[in-house]
Every structure is written in structure tokens, then in C-alpha cells.
Length: 368
Length: 217
Image (cartoon, rainbow over all chains, first blue to last red; front, side, top):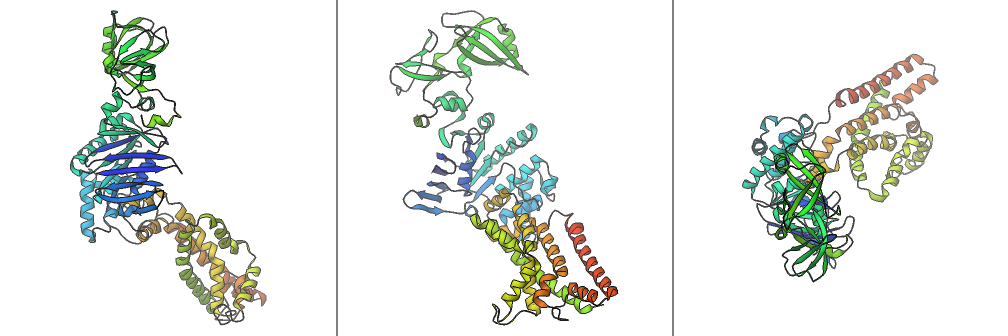
């Protein structure tokens, strides 16, 4: 179990509390410069937060407060961290086998045993036949696997992955996803994955923490995060397209710029007549050829075909709102959707998620 | 041919190399983390490059004369010219090694840290092999430069045969006494040695990316 509580203002702001249990793959997601890598480096001991604590497997790695300063700080070598760097950071003068031997240098004194263990790791990564090659004789994906073998060779208490799939092509990435999924089953250690790719986080992670400007905004399983973002900034960061504004009053949501009122559920936390942002996930939307009492007329402004997927842009409420809808090409055909024609949108009120509307500078947006 | 001068020059070059290389590696490594004082230290260490040999020689003559810092006079002795040679060669030994250390990607060092290596192990297993080219360049430059050093050695050591009269000084002596044939032979030897040293540096070590002093597997 990894428990971190980090706080710093310089050089980069960081306010992050999270827990990652053994066997869990936890993704840190956020835009570039949001502090994801800083968090990872701090956990590994490559940089220190001003205050906070890092505890892993019951062992205190770092502790500092404003009064006493740093009271505990293990150096990176003492932290038992497997760290996979974005650009691999393989030792260029050593072969793949020697690279994997390095983490075993202090724990396994006998050279033959060291080599045997390193070879096992390379075998597990499916690249044992490349053991004698130096990094510049390996492809990106192969280097990635050597780097992963090196990160795991020390039997670390935690595995930290810094954008590990960003520098490889799509087929290689798929192979690495599979390897990571298999490793997860066997390792049973906390795995922290830094990525800016939401699809990747959705695909791989058990839970996601969204970071923005160094602040952890929300931690939740992917499904919850995409359906019920904590606030409008989280919704924005997780790429929810259909985000609107309205006023919430005792279970009723008035959509700004339209007469439509939805019956929505909330936890009773939002006071009456509160301006809110609201989102509707894809499964809360449906399109129909025929109008109904609860449907809204929409004008098909654009249809973008991406292979078998079509992204349809609709104008609603006298072109005051834009709604994006994804469907298969077959569905588009079945509904007879064409640019310039009208259709009818049904919004399922029970799927609507409302959030307090706060400006980007409002500090409360991080806590709501 | 002045065999004594050739042997003395080789002795001086090898002693200089043996003493300055470990020091150069240490200083170059420390300079990476020198902070605000780095520029001043670098400037100080590069001074022998721009200082006229006679000026440097003069200060060394004053510094090493009398009882010197060792309590005994060092001018006009092999120890004296060795100290002078070490000082003159500082920039040639340190700068290539420093550039080589600086060229190492910091992430590689961090990867070694999180792999559990101590600072000494990182230095020995990662940094030193990766800086190998720079160290070779420093060795070749120092060796070749020591063989050819004239002004400072002459100021500090004079021209005592077998003690301070190096090849360069012997060539000067031969020319002064119109023995151009011997001067030509000695010059050719110096030229050949320097050429071989440079060829070794570029030809052998230059092609290999680097090689570790110790196997880690």
C-alpha cells in the first residue's frame, strides 16, 4: 500500500493526497505541466516536496512539516522503487542483460546468479534473445521492455511508470499493454501510471486521479470519473464534450438559454437556485426520427466519419447549444441523419450529472 | 641524438599523466555540482591556457624557489618541472573530462539511483565508462602537451641534462648551437610521438562509444 500526502509551492506547485493499494493500477492524468511527473519523481526520491509524507509497504520514506523541516528522507536507492522513465534512460554502454543486472548489483553478489535472474526477467518480457545487444541496437518497444525488466528486477515495493507508452507506435503499445496486464496479476504491488492519454488510463487503470496545476482534483474509478466528474474543470480535463450550464433548484435543472427543465438527482449538497455546470454522458443521449413530448429538436450541423465511427455535431435550442454525439456509421444511416436536416434528441435526466459552477481561479474548485 | 632528453620528457609526461588524470576526473566530476562558484572555478582552472608561459613560469619560479611550500627549493629540479607541468596541463586534463560528464543524460544517473546504486557505484559503473572518451582525450592532450611544453619548463627548470632538460629544450639548445641535424631528429621524434598519440585517440578510442572498466553482469 502506498500512501502519499504532498504539498509544495516551489519550484512547481503540488497538492496531492492519494493511496494506492497492492495490485492496484492507479493512473495520474492531467495536461502537460500539471505536476504528474513531479509527483512520481517525489515518490521515487528524485525530488522532495516541502511538506508531506510518503509511506510504502508500512515503511516511511519521507516526512517533512513546516516546523521541523524534513525529518525522514530515504535516498532513491533506499526506496525500493521500480521507475520506468519516459525515454527509457537505459545505460547506453551496457547490454540489455547488463542493464537488468544493475539493480541486482547490491542484492545478488554472485555474477552468474545476477545474470541468471536478469535473463529470467528478459525472458518474461519476451526479449531474452536480445540480451547481448546494447540499447542503440534495439527498437523503441524493445528498449521499453528492457527498461521495464530493469525496473522490476529489484523486486520493488512499487512500480512507477512515467508516460511509458507515449514514445512507441500503436502495435507496440498494444503489446506492452498486454505485458503490463500480465505483470499486474503476478506482482501484487501498487503501480502508479502517469499519462495524459485518457483512453489509456480508462483501459488500464483501476482508479484515476486527475491533476491540474499540481492539484489532485478527483480520484475515482474510470467509469465514475467519466460519468460523475467532481466539478466542471474535471469534466473539461476528462474530455466530456457535452457540458452545459443551468440553474439547479430542489431537484430541478433549468437549462440556460432554453425552456427545458430536467428532473435530476443530487446528494442534497447544492443550495437552491445555484448556477451549475452539468454534463450528460453518451449513454444518456438518444436520437430519434420522430418528435416526442420530451425530445428537443436539433439541427445536424456536421457529420464526421472516422472509419466506422461517426461524430455528429448538433445545434439545439435555436443554435444556442452544441451537442456532440458519437454513433456507428450504421446508426447514422438508420436514423437518416444528414447535414442540414433536423432530428430529435432525447436527454435522459437521470443520467445528468450536475456540478457547482466555479471559476478557474476559485480555490474551492479543487475541493468540491 | 639526446636520449636523456627523450627519456626525461617521457618520464615527465608519464608522471604528469599519472598524477593529473585522477585529479582531473575528481575535479571535473565535482565541478558538475559546484553551484554558483562554478564559473569562477572554471575560469581559474582555464587560466594556464591564456597566460603567457613566461608569466606563469615567472610566478612558479618565485613560488617554487627559496624554501617553496614543501620546505625545500624546487626550482631547477625534476619535482619542480613536474609541478609546473601539472599546473600548465590543468585545463587540458579537466576540460575534456568535464564536457564528457556534462554530456551524460541526467535521467541515466537518476535511473542508476532508483536502481539502488550508491554514488560511488554510479560513478564507477555508469559515469566513468560513459566519460571514457573524454578521459582518453584528456590523457592524449596532456601527454602530447607535456612532451612539447617549453616556456614554463625552461623558466622553472632551466636546462640541466638528465634533470630538467626535456626534448623541447634540447631542440632549442641544438638550434642555438647550429646542430640542426640533431634538432631535426628530435623534432621528428616529437612530431611522430604526438601524431601517434592523436591517432590512438581518434583511431582506437574514437570509434568505440565507450567501454566500462568493469563488467557488471
